[in-house]
Length: 318
Image 1 (cartoon, rainbow, N blue to C red):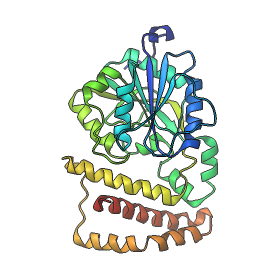
Image 2 (cartoon, rainbow, N blue to C red):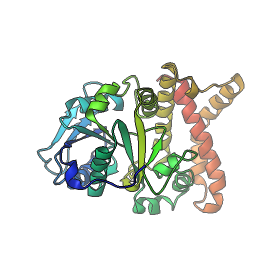
Image 3 (cartoon, rainbow, N blue to C red):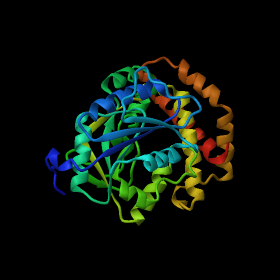
Image 4 (spheres, rainbow, N blue to C red):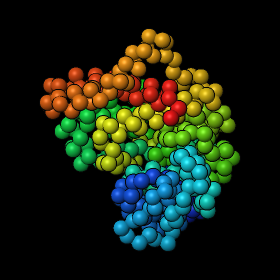
């Protein structure tokens, strides 16, 4: 697999449509839009923000002419991405989460990769910003996120093939920063809108894409900044894991038996008991002295709460 790119002038035929689904994160979205608008200077492009909330998107600055804010006519991130793609006028789609800070070099890399590779979906790498890492490493929950790799795409791919030095093929996708030619996305059928939240919609989509013969790549040398500064409370993190459990159940009900979770009666009883003790465990975690010597105990408690949250989402439909 070659590790070179054509020159920028060869990318001139690609108009880029950036689709950003968002819900109730105006402060974070503002930073994302500022970075994206700067990164897209000189590029034939548009930005489509798809609002999945009843609360209007309000920015502390006037939006450029190439930025549109649209209300999602349905509900959920999958439908939001599909709607944005339907409205897009570019030949290349870029799905961008509302907390990803993109740089000009990331955009140029994306354009060049799609000049080189056909019938593919491409992810760029991401990491937490240095200032955010420095901040969270001062508390137990933040050190937990770092320890288990939740602060980088490489960490999320723990156990899978990874190459730090060159573009490499992979078996899945993440829609945090995902680019694809619009004709290929349209031909794929798009995201399955049965998923109520972000989570296993990427897994189900990737399975269908593989069956259709599409390739997936990660370019590790570009490192977007994942600006999750507003999502550092353990309660909010656990609630996202609960919603992930819901989407996992949807994937299993759609026929992906390999992701189904099976709870024998004894485990079901234990997790129900632990679910009733969630507040107590959270209280203990917050009362532990904030010193690394107590991390081992705190990490075990967080892992228990993680299992409980996934169980609650998977077993309960509401």
